[in-house]
Length: 82
Image (cartoon, rainbow, N blue to C red):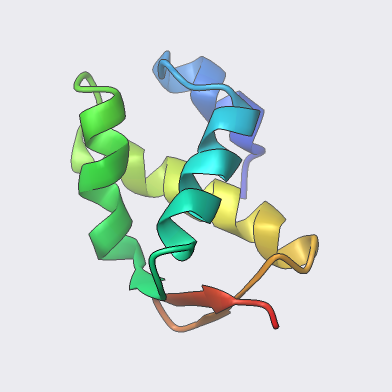
């Protein structure tokens, strides 16, 4: 998968990597979620994004958070790592 920064730069999203990670962590503080549930949150932060672009951003951010040990995924569901 392409890096999060590359995706942000390519689709001209109004995000930074840090902002995406913070958005994911903030949503996770509310409980487990699915990728489909985070898409409207991302799109509300940048109304220029379609669902496909929002999904690419979410998947790239989650991939890094999984690698860092911050979250775990089971299918499309995202859970705290602990």
